[in-house]
Length: 441
Image (cartoon, rainbow, N blue to C red; front, side, top):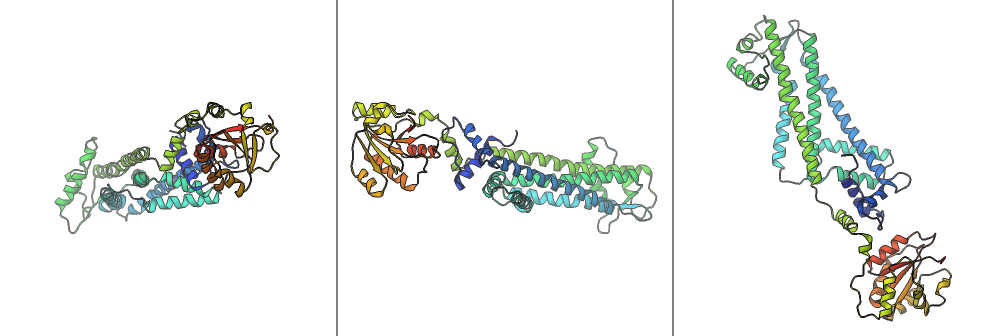
């Protein structure tokens, strides 16, 4: 699935609507159309473009980590193959260098996963924390919006899927380290003739034989030729002579052990943890703001404009005018009713010369007088879409909606109607009918 997905866009929009003044368009046909606003706002560099850039930085950081681990794997093997004049290599020491720390890390990871199985921790760990730090520094250097960066971190490191992301990165890094060690071991064995020996003070010969045979079980399933009991006994450090077949058997055993007990398990668990991460991400519950955005576009716009709790006792002429108010343009009969101009600084529109009354609501006293009276007759309040509604405006229309049951908000629609959608949103939130008036008409 290509990035950004629908859920990623929704998460970004929800974060921006919660922490900034950004709002999705209210009159979009569906959620997908509304989310396209992320591609155009702001005009310089859109929020979605910045979001995609952060994802690319994160992927590059992970790739850089894998490359570093791959190089470390190459560098770790040659010192372990440092031989004396007799070209003897201690097989015990090779296993400790190539698989010892890998096995210890694997045990620690397994115990940690079991201990935190029922916990939803937000801890990102040192590895993911380092990647997040690098990603944040790069975003700051690239002049990416702070809120977009925070939204990306919240989306990428979701609480319930975070540990699987950390695990997949850890297994992938160890897999690269072991794969590089396997390749370097193969290269050294192809270009050097070494004698594999072992020595021990605390363990008996029988214990070492049992350990070697136990590690040989899995490679033997694939028909590989591995050291037998004779090869093991002939490889003590005090025995100098070693046949070519014995050296080859030990080389096969070493390469097979690194592959079957190191590289392949890490590869399998990388794929498993990455799959679990995507599953947890897909089943992540939506935030409250994401649910609000989804519900906002779940029904067509025409359905959201229906009358709520309509007054069935209005006179017939009043009901007719209110039904007609849903249209973008007002009917001619509307200009003969009572009108009020809310915070109006322009000339009175010529179309209102035939109105029954035209009052001004430009200050607190005039607005209080308007709210002190009540009428069931249709009342039209004209507002200027070139000015943004504020909290005082919301308070006034909330009270006016209860005082005048047949109140209708008329919004100017001309070249200066910058805040048309804000006024329409205010009308819906205060449960008022709204219509538009083009003053050129």
